[in-house]
Length: 117
Image 1: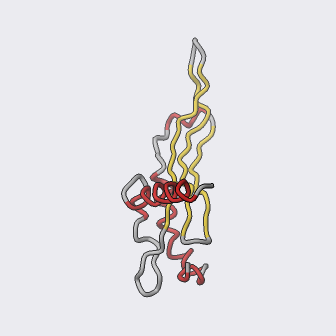
Image 2: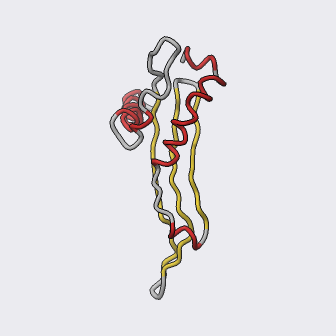
């Protein structure tokens, strides 16, 4: 990947946390001395349906956040409801972002070398 493309991608996913749909995660990951650990990611939500000319049928509902924390850790948080009951749910990607924020103290405690990232 060209360095300019990599930098643009990095800036975009950091922007999702700093100013975008995952902004509730801003300042969630900090070193013991209070410095922010850079994180970024991409959010996405979906009402997944099977559509025909005669009817629409809910297949699933998803909310996902693909993320990285520092230079070494990454992952995916997904909220998922399968089947016809999916129409009764209206969550967005804010749900997995919030779950990750709630897990931040535990993750920081479990990954002590994160502070050096």
